[in-house]
Length: 364
Image (tube, rainbow, N blue to C red):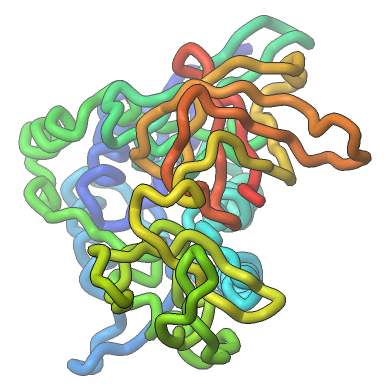
């Protein structure tokens, strides 16, 4: 029998931000049996001696009190270190640029968090992500889909594209049908203490930390040469891990041809390659992806015409995805309808069709 809302137990991950606060409020309003949970995933102490997460926890407590729901506090620092940070450091050490938020969603938020929620008897885990869970078919043909949010600018399906059917079956995204402006208005309507709180930015739970500081002591930082696209040496770099394809840097080039950007890395020779923004190396017409993850049950037929997003909030671009011909590999080749700027090894290419996130793979 289908449960009535009041018998459906939902654990809401409350970060102390406005989005998760409104997600909790909407579920309470809808009559679900709601419990909040503040997850500690990373912890440092500031100059004032305060824990980095303390202020957010206190905001979550105030929201929970306003809504009349309990707030748990769970510690996932070990899981976050083992399942996210170690992988991130290893990728940077290999000269690639990983995405901590994708890894965190796959292994921690909808991995360790969801597992713990299910162990404690909750039917669903809800978060303040801008996305929606859709359902197609019935019975044994029932399939969950990951649908883009109403707010196209805030849509977070890029970060969620590695979720699977079991995870989506027990996940709720209550604010996916709203824009950010509407969420702010709802927060004021519910008189939530976080209604006007500014958004946090930075590396997942680590926060706004300069990349060099974040990586210092965790990855090898062997200095090497910087060359232009013709192979002419123009300077030295402080370690390939600190540079990302497409980044602008202040290297000086003889003759002064304007700003230079990172267009490539020679990992074997520890060389950083730079060039002007219009360099052909910066604007390829195709790329490879591997470690493809599909959200749906059945794989789409190849070749597949769809749209691709190369980074969060990047424009959706037309492409064709196909197997690599003449090679025994699981890699896929993605051909763009037009040259695209700086596909970055280690980042994710995420594919969409008609507002549904199909899944994605790692850019090679």
